[in-house]
Length: 310
Ligand code: GRG
Image (cartoon, rainbow, N blue to C red; front, side, top):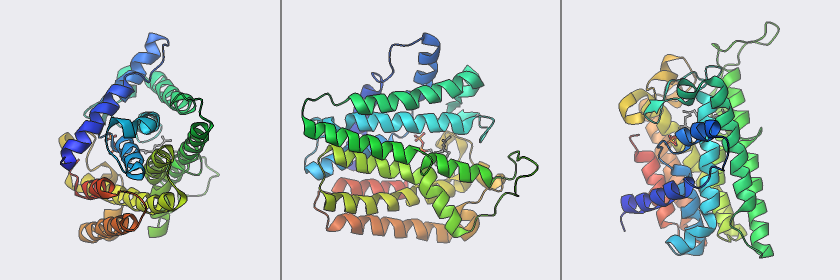
């Protein structure tokens, strides 16, 4: 099967599974949660979770990925919550996401905040609940996956990265006695992105692999792989922010560059940024090469991340 067909098959399975993830709740909040969760997106993180599970099990298909489907859905719910909150006027203040008006534009700010909160809480409920099993070994895997996801989403991960980003943005109101916004050098930029976007991408891979029963050596290799693709994803995102069109990206293009935010392209220029992304790809492939798993699909996804246009 070609990589595009492989990705499509998993995306479709995730789309179907996601429709079952929002609980029976007041329609006003269900509508807002569904609007964002089922409104498109590349579904990169859930596909990574399924592929990592398949890689450690050395087999492909619905039987292999069933163990990781709750992780796949949960990570997309957490990711979607982060996008809703990031788009709010108090944060990045954006009106276009996934080719549609953002949650607060459609549902109002208060409901958008609640939709994000609801998605995050339901993601952790899903991780605790599924896959349903009496097997204590599965319970151990579920707990490890849940911890991985919580730490990635939390203050040392995505929330911490977003906080660093916010603190460095001069346009954000700061109390008068607060120190001036810090200027980010290359190291600070890498650290901010490793937390803000890298941590959840890493957690997708690691939690998916945990659910597949990964050994410690396999997890160590996947950790190296995931950190490299997380960085590559961000570098390419910065390149696309400069080169891409809003219609292709489904979000406002050129915004980071225009707002004077620190970016890889701003620090290194386009050519060097492309070289840096290629270096990440090379190291991600190397991490998989000798690992005790079947890494061919994960290597393909790494190449796709670097070559993507949206
Ligand atoms: C609000 C706690 C909190 C965190 C927000 C991830 C994040 C932190 C903000 C997203 C802002 C942003 C546009 C970052 C650039 C990289 C990124 C995560 C893009 C969106 O991810 P994709 O490209 O989106 O995977 P789709 O829509 O395809 O799922």
